[in-house]
Picture 1 (cartoon, rainbow, N blue to C red):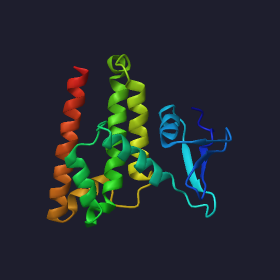
Picture 2 (cartoon, helix red, strand yellow):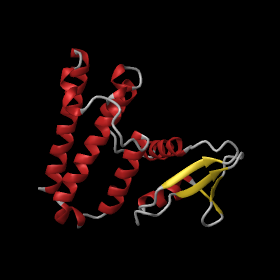
Picture 3 (tube, rainbow, N blue to C red):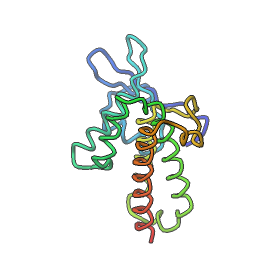
Length: 180
């Protein structure tokens, strides 16, 4: 995908049908998931209000895949995500998720040789990128505390961070086993 390529614009009509402005036809959520797997950036807007609905639809795609038994997210991670919406830790969660997936991507690049040969690797990589964008809403800046400052937060936040670190270590161990 070229860096200058504009996101594919999908318009949602009042009837809730999704319209691909490039091909002038209607598309489904599965079509949109396919575009993302192919490396396209997608932007979904409400035709009447102009509201950006991308995040809502990406989350819906993830939820549909999870409900069809294509589970990627362990129950513990889903539980922690729900918890993060109701605690003060929610200001840290987007940065943590972004840093975690950045670290995962870097790790994948270091072990690309054996992984590239794995069937479905490219699709898995595209789904991972879509997940990161869905969960972070495209968050890339830092408005919360820096990673090195996280150690200075209250004990209950530290406990939550330790739990997240443990889960990340478990994910890294699984990736190591896949590579080794």
